[in-house]
Image (cartoon, rainbow, N blue to C red; front, side):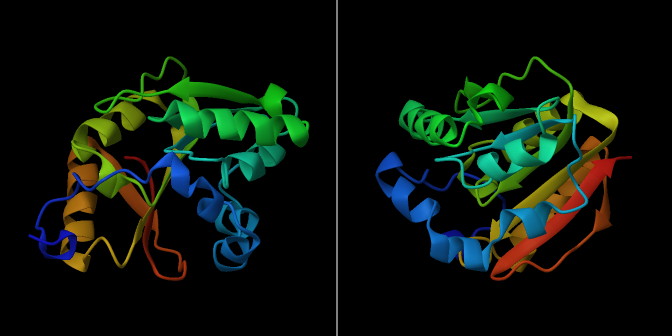
Length: 191
């Protein structure tokens, strides 16, 4: 069964750390500009979560957006990705704004409440997307938002619709469906 013919979300292979360089290119920034994508979703002083942060393509932009009084929790399953991000954050002087969190395959391991969560191009890689969404929901402040983005090439329309149904069952509600190139997108909040 191909990933695009599946009916339920989750279970695809994880992008290996060897692909980290591709995930943080200037060309990608032209396609997926982090500042534009997250504009209006993150404020200075907030606690933000980047799930499946990889080498930090979005994490570094988030760290700038939350400012010195905020924090970004960079969560990834692969220690190598977190190590790459730590080096990049150190070079940019952003390491003090980032908390690095190595996750388990079935849970993030959050301890803090958060104001914003980003799940970009990775939910389809998670064995149990419902459990991940539930953990985010349980740690999201009352006005908190989740930006959920999946790639069109890996996640069909029906699978993304099923993902949204799962999120709504948990208690999320959709507040926006912005356009992001080659992506399926929803901004959700606690209902």
